[in-house]
Structures are given as C-alpha cells and as structure tokens.
Length: 152
Image 1 (cartoon, rainbow, N blue to C red):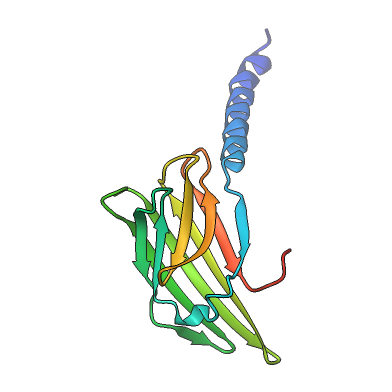
Image 2: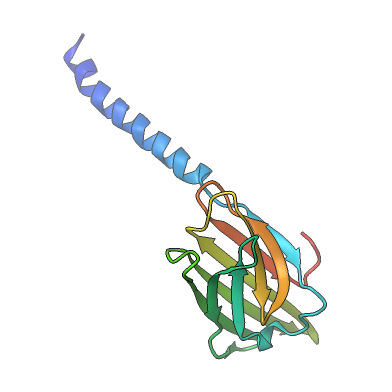
C-alpha cells in the first residue's frame, strides 16, 4: 500500500463516521402533528394554563403562559412546561401566536415535549379543556401544532 493510500484511509474513515452520525441526527427528528383548534377554545390569546396528561389522565407536564407580547399585528405568549411527580424529568415548551391581517385572525399553538415515555399516548389540555392528542417517538419526543388554519 502506498504512503498516500495509508494517509487517506483514516481521513476517509473519519468522513464515513461523521456522515453516518449526521444521518442519524437527521433521522431522529420528530414529525410535527397538526390538529385543528377545538371549537371550545375560541381565543388562544386568553389561555393561561397548559398541561400534558398521560393515558391515565395524570398530569405529566404543566406550565403557565407568560403575559402577551405584541409586535405589530402579532401577539405571542410562551410557556415553559415542567415535569410533575408522575414524570419529573419530562420537559417542554409551548408558544401561542395570534396574528391579525386584513380583519382575519389566525391562531396557532406550538408544543414541543421531550423525555416523556417513548411511544406513549398523551393529551394536551388548555385551561382544562382537551385540545389534542399525540404519541411520542422512540425517544419520548413530540411536536404538536394546534391552529385554526386550514389543514396543510
């Protein structure tokens, strides 16, 4: 084997390892699940409490939305979700966006959760009203969007 070949093999090996690692990171992504906004929740901008409950209706994550921040024609509110005694290491975050253009208001809530039971089924509650259900991936993560926009 030539000297150049001996020098190239470790570099090619490292490139292969890094390439496989990059593919692994991309494939571990989370698919976002879209849900329509339930009619019982007419104004996302007014929601104060967010909860994620497990299949036994136990609260595993909870949080309170911040005061609204208005930027032009858009109102945003955020909430950090913390685990309860049912699942203390669970975590999540949520954001509400309400935008008004030409007298048309669009409402959207985005929820990201992690460290929940892998493959578990959960329900999202807003001010005590069920808004959506979802299943976590093999890593215990999920992304959920609830909006009044037509399905994409």
